[in-house]
Amino acid sequence: MRLFQKDIEPRCAYCAQGRPLGDRVICARKGIMDPAARCRSFRYDPLKRVPPKPAKADFSKWKDEDFVL
Image 1 (spheres, helix red, strand yellow):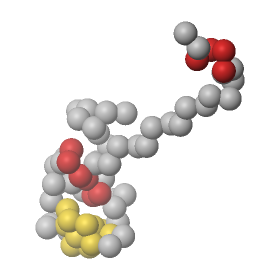
Image 2: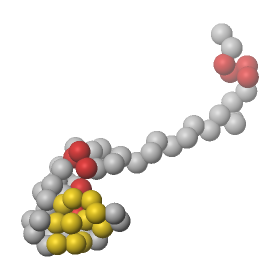
Image 3: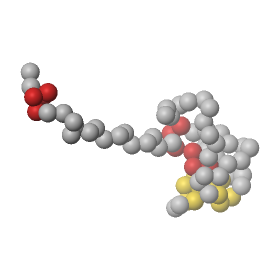
Image 4: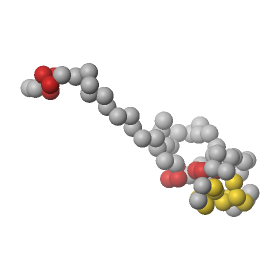
């Protein structure tokens, strides 16, 4: 998943018109909204989007010999 993709699913959590308010979002047009909500006036702000955490590497299948030069 990339932050700057063009076909982003609209959500109030990363809309340019919304501001965080605890666990809710306050919208300039609609008022207090759920972060997963959306409306027609959605404008994407990539700086509000938090990327998912990377998966942790699983080194259990490797042996110590695999890391020796």
